[in-house]
Length: 358
Length: 149
Ligand code: FES
Image 1 (cartoon, rainbow over the protein chains, first blue to last red):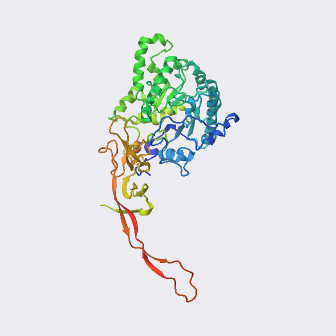
Image 2 (image 1 turned 90 degrees about the vertical axis):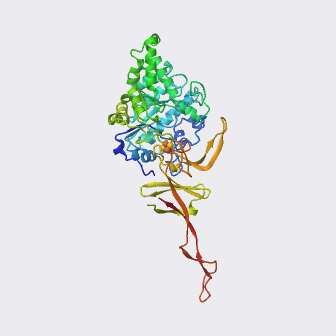
Image 3 (image 1 turned 180 degrees about the vertical axis):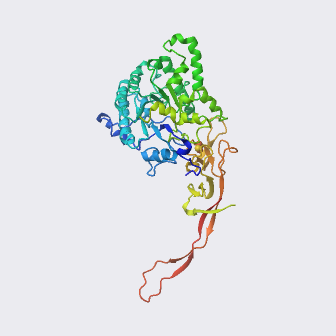
């Protein structure tokens, strides 16, 4: 309805949106794919311990029948793809909180059911939908199976896990997942969900924050922790061709971690002798970050300096997070920057990582 | 120059409701708060989302740490993106009323007395020469909501 709406593809140029949440209209959508032994349970995920007073889904784009925003292909096509001229959207779904369930087998079956629904309902509906194979990290063997099974679908472009895990993802316990991803030539991606609930670790390093505000502020700490774990345990050295995407937990902290890790590596290298180059080099070569929620410094132009510090021309990808409440506008969300950098962020980095046209 | 635009009959916009109208290339949210009418530009100053399509709610203030006071019930609209709160009666944001605001428009209710209608009483149907059922000239006064831009 906004009169000063976007000018569409013309204004934005080629765009890949790296975080689009297709959302189930009802639990039955997933349940139909669960094995018999879980039919009586259905979809049982921990409730939100942290609540947003305004809700989590955008209410201006709900479907007319009352089903939530993002729950039909048409909803995403109309309000995101067509409206803003988005060429591809990486689907990140709504089920990542299965990683906080203690029952490894059930979590794995939920992931399988989700992947079936993804292929059946979404990937078949529009070539602009690109999928993420969702896995249950607490079940590495099952996760590897799902990656080999669903990873061969040409529209599935990455493996996706919750940023919330038991212990850091660098631990060799998780490596069978990475072996499978590397074998299938798919990047690994992390996206937060329901941090603090179920059997997850506290959402930040000083425990459980009191409210959604504080938990939301603390999201970068999840990815700082995971990046630190992957680096120190040697995942980048063990899986040199495996790329990692860190979704929705900010990026302004990346230079800070690059500098801090490089400095510590010089004097503490003995503990991580497998790192053959400065940590920042692995970060630039093997990791990607997504833009939303965009940082809004007092002087927007300061972000340009951050872009330079983090080598954003190689590491940063546009994301909207449609249809969540904190989604960014594809045209007005990002600050001014050079045309060449804008192209890298809006399209080229993701194009190269996901090889979208293959 | 101010122009006048009819929005809808007043009874169609009951207290607590809103309606988005398009006038030229403007989209405007018209709100009824307890019988008073207000109009805001349907564009959020943040990322230009359709502000007036967000939740109509109240806000919380605090006299001291740990205290919460619910205020302005029904007088706040929360942008459907990023949830910035705006006072519907002023267009001002709650977090920075002087600097962050959306445009407001004048809105009024006007009586409209230009419709005469013949309204029949209840009665049996007319047969032959029987006198016609009594009729009245009724003037319906209809209030309409009018926006001035
Ligand atoms: S667009 Fe309204 S709060 Fe961001």
